[in-house]
Image 1: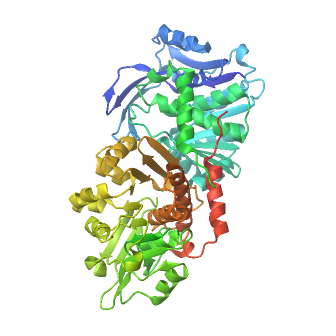
Image 2: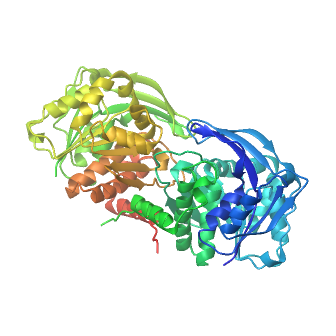
Image 3: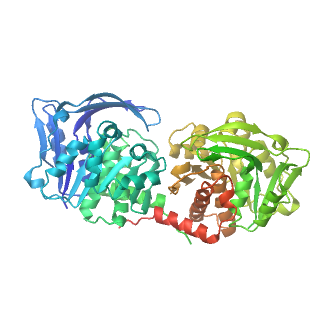
Length: 305
Length: 305
């Protein structure tokens, strides 16, 4: 089934304890579509970049099967730029610089050919823009997934609250879940957030794995303990892309299949953090992914007699 | 098979965001033997208390099948006392008061009847005392498990390093693993710590679950997301007691059985935190434990096609 991803395509400059980069390709939608490209063949992108965005990166996305008809190029503008520095524990980071550039006026135009998409991934951006995407789709997709962040809870909470009833799956991290719900217990937080709209909630806990909530059901997916986390940038987006890409490719939105999708998403994220930026997720093989997923099986499986 | 636990039996005074207690019964060996009592029938305790320790608590331990022949009562002394206050997130706490009292001169005498024990749990106390226990056993148990803490890494590291080659399973938390190994990555930390002696390492991550390492094998057990963590005191000891109690009762120290044991330990710990002190783990039923373990199965299981 076809997937539509709307979100940022950007330049990032990163500094981690292992090194730093100049401007490299980043952005939520970049990570999402790259991760999804290993699962679904109809992988449509709506985003905006400036005239400074390199054609070879667009070519790379297309090589990976990403349809870039919806990628607007503002020749006179500059691409969204984010620069960040990670602390030693890699779980926290400081934003060093943000230049919204063309993202400041992002008008998400949906090409006609994308209208029939069955799976919609609303990558992290302003809730008002995310809502516009839904309004511009002639028919509601089978599954709408939303990523957001604490920034929007701080400055656009009303917009976010108006959006939540319109989505099926929300993905946020543990801190954000606590902020949104005003509950410390993630179980209570989940119940409260599902009461705000989304029937399914994924709480990402970084190196501690992820929790999937749906009604009374809970599933916990571990993160793979890695020798080294080189650069966590994009891990959450890569996770989301693997998750919804797997759902779209199997066209099965049962809870059991969502559990599998979380494992695939976690496997993709575990690759992402092994190198800077998108480096590790641009040319994975199916065998590598399969092998990584089997590591998760081995990591998490036990049998009670 | 018979289990021998050596460690503290104490008074605790606790304050959590939910309330506070006067002196209640605590101590590592109390939690360990209580948790183990649901699994193994030969549950032997070596510890020391003062004349102020209530007989009805000793009676309770005995009712739960704990053999208290090795519990020394120093009529003229006072029982070890610890007082702590938890922060709002329940993951961190401040020690308000510590009075070692009779624990300050603890001489772990092993009754003759305990000499044949096959499973030994060295609860958290000074490494020199833990080593003495091993030296006083005529034959080495089949499995020796050690709990320790950052305090001993700070003030008795040489003693601890001399002890590590003598134990089979070490259980510590993530912070302690990082301190002991000087590695941030838990995977690297585990490899380094196993190089110090113990072939099996359990890294406890509190609300984030636990990792079991043995050679190249890794197993991850989630913690059950609870509505409310009322009092985390003793959770780690209860976990250890459930783990080694299950191993002793099944007398199977294979990796697969250790995975099951971790789930049983986690289930016991999930009960422990639901009420103050030992309140929740003194009268559980087998059905309650079974049901809780099945919640872990449901929480963690998935199937890859």
